[in-house]
Image (cartoon, rainbow, N blue to C red; front, side, top):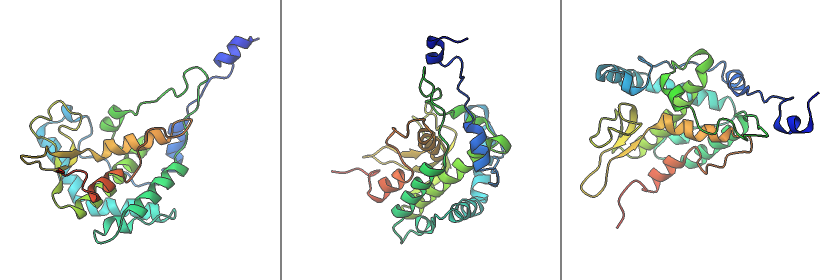
Length: 232
């Protein structure tokens, strides 16, 4: 029979993390978006990275429709985000609220608290985003949505493979990002939208709630308020 200390340590009631199963149930009917070449950017040739970008751009309208339709079916219209003449921030806040409500919470361990406090960045990069990893297709489409909302409001931004000098040691190097060129006053702005979405959604699933301070739509708000531009 387990003693009091064993009970406090949770030995007689092991923590079972079924977050992955919950995500598969939540997004089981979501259309997958496998890249042309899966894997971390460092494992891909420049030609393979370019092929990923070509595919990304070729299916852009289709994937925006997939994400929009999925959210609309759940009571969230993102049309204003994709209309550069509209105020897209209320729609972005509605997406953020839906994510808060819909995403499952990871279990709480009485010993270690949140046993997976950091998002699995390698998992996102290595996955083909299908089957058990369909969640990553959702993240990719959320990134497209917010990124395209930014690009349509500020045409200085564009989708490209990040090969900017000085970024060789950054995680975004060789990945598809939303990029605004720099100038003599301001460094380039590089937004890895998929990785950003991973960093948004993973804290939302923390056992005791999102303590990161980050939210869906924060980059769109930064673009609208010209936070990415130099100020006197």
